Length: 368
Length: 250
Picture 1: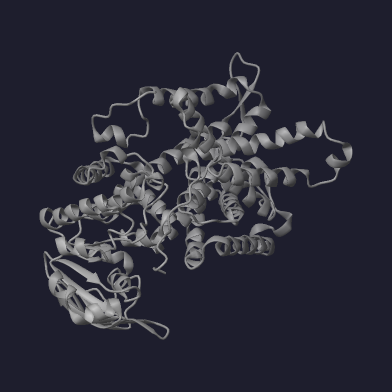
Picture 2: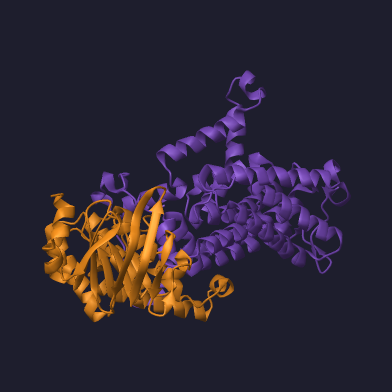
């Protein structure tokens, strides 16, 4: 078991526990930076997809994992982000401006949904956000002059100073081509994680957590519930909007049903399976979400033909996994990971009941 | 310091608090007693602004706080603990104490996201306050423990610590001794006196344990069915015929 001697408050505030801790993350970043040199085109595009999912996942994690508000309508923000970004590009607004603008537009819409969501929680909020997603889809479908309706919208290539970001570059001396867009997404993901990790160790992030764990005592601590919820919603929407904008380039041609309820559920699954209330969970969840379809396609080779060709196999597996996680590991992959770490930390002394779920004491019932 | 003037609060046909008037002086340990359903917690919830008063006014020194929002109450310097403990259960003790310092924040969203010097200095300041409280209440060994997994007695103490992190002028406590064993109650008496005298915090507490009240309270208010019975020293109230009648019904 390793103890870290903290000799100043700064050490406790720092994101990285010590140099060893920092080293591993540094190594991870380094590996991700040189990976495209050795990985094929397919692997690169899968990793790009992982980064984009992680950005959207971070958005939803802030809302669900940290503020305790459930949204089934995040596909709407993906769609909004994608359309705003694409339309701005169409009118020759540069990539570096249009992506933040798309985020701001989504943030404003998030604020509006947040306002509507103030009086509802739990299942009711989930349904309200679902309704919002339907509205967005229908508006985009019918506002033909702007969005092209069902014919969709072609996404122009992202450029910075005339340089095409979606091009593949052949690196001298190597056979494989390196996708520039991979790096764009990676840098944005690292930036997003940096901002969110900082926010979560500051008063705003803590006010989200306060709202999640007990609204009544959050108020008694001087946290303005309205402000915290609206802030969380709009931040979440803005991040998801960025992911939507990036995803538009991956898709190439946008349709009103490019992002549907299935994507909302997938995102929700990302945060639940990854681990509610942890930033690591977002990455674990994104990896899981990218690997699952691969695993399913491998599985298809072993299953009887009748099962493979009759649709519904994928939703069945997705749903079962979600239920299994909710029942057996509510804190997701990250929760399991921490338990494994603890097991080795306390090796011969690990107590089985450490994480036994206990009945919590009665909450104040008199107030409400 | 705190004035309740003709407070009335009813739920449907039930008058939980009925024309209640009293004054809490600066430095008091003011205890509210009464049988179950007397409206004691309702009085605290009125002060915390969780409930709206139908009639009457609440004054904190020269501020009328009858109509301010529940989150603004903390900014006026009023902290609060709950009967059944309302901690942020998935967070550590330290995090709970940090959350409580929300009202003292000087940063905004941008400086927090970038975590520039201002935000870092603020975090250090918050931690110093939290460590002071941890030191005061001897919570060192629980600093990094998740509050949901702590024994009830410790949770109660953490909740008091969390309230102190607001650096309040007035502390409202709802049955601080409920669920504690005799030794813990004994300790609690000492904490309450320390908080009152060393930190100069005026305390209003709802309490059932008469021995605790006799030891620490400077004044006691007895109420039944939402109405005031009497106010006085613990001895006076204990022997007041109407109080005895309210408790024993004879």
